[in-house]
Image (cartoon, rainbow, N blue to C red; front, side):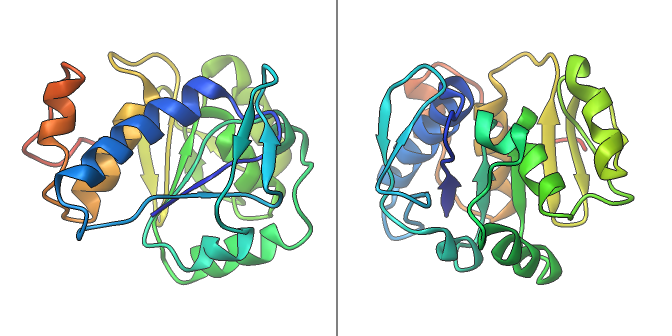
Length: 192
């Protein structure tokens, strides 16, 4: 499992997903490994923190699930040159790819949203027109291998994505992480 970390990554989108998944991975480390994926060893977050990435962008096609948090570079189309090709291979291989809010822009700039219905924060919904994508509204939405979340939600969007990843991959971990973070862990599929 991997989380794509691009320049100007939104710390809230990144760390709410990462924190939940890393806690879930300790419940049964044999179930999955979690990797921070990037095009450089160190990436600056939206507010200037330095974040270390352990794997390069080619790992995007290897991981079972990929989470893409929102980022300044992603929103502005400043992507590593080889990233769109790797993401295209993921999507054409029907590999689950999860976008948190403006993380969906990374798939848009990679040419992968044409005709798809996706979620993003309502104030950013007008940005989808440049990618020929349709705005699904607030919440979690699935269109093929692309799962996106945006807008108002009862829990942090990164946590909702993390729970969805665990459910979609039939991983039994997450209940302990949810308890430690004082969150509920759904037993059934999350509505889409």
